[in-house]
Image 1 (cartoon, rainbow, N blue to C red):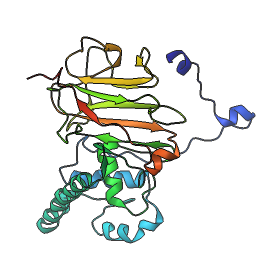
Image 2 (image 1 turned 45 degrees about the vertical axis):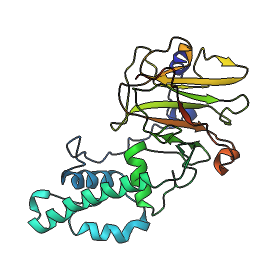
Image 3 (image 1 turned 180 degrees about the horizontal axis):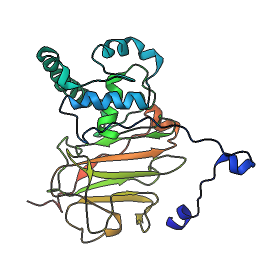
Length: 276
């Protein structure tokens, strides 16, 4: 895989067609903002920088006119030190209210066998700002459903939170592997940090491209646990000694996935391997 990646090069179009090399595009001046601004008024300064560098759609002009009163928005000069106490207090409440709305929306989803199956509303948000914010918080970005679907779960088949104290099995019966025209994978993240888990195998995801997977009569069992299993290590997805989150990525999913006719199997607790 690395050899294939290393073989790629980038060539400017002008060099490819033998034309005059174009002048570089001027980049907007970067404004220094703290790396973690979500919980402070610096968030609005960072938002202003972001919207200056990547202007919003014209359909948002009504909202932008309201933001501009405080210097927030493309070309704005927002400075939290210039705010009066009432406005500063209101913006702080807005931050907390926004985070609460995102959390509540994330909890109010339909699940199938414990999996949330977001087949609509990802990648093309229009004016659904809450959905866009939720995807930005938990997934950073997302393709449209025709390109990728991102099933995810925090619970097992009994609705209990996934935790490294337990061992789990994700079993795909023969003929029931995710129907995709490209590839699929399942990635494990620590919760609530949503960060990858360091592990002895340096394995952070498992899927149809994972070398050495073993099948039994066409069925695939993925073992998810903190402790290395005594068997099926080739099918082991290491988990932290704490809560975790699973996200699948189904690239070029078949229509059966997008319509809900295909259902992923539940993550089942393996009582024989769960610690007591």
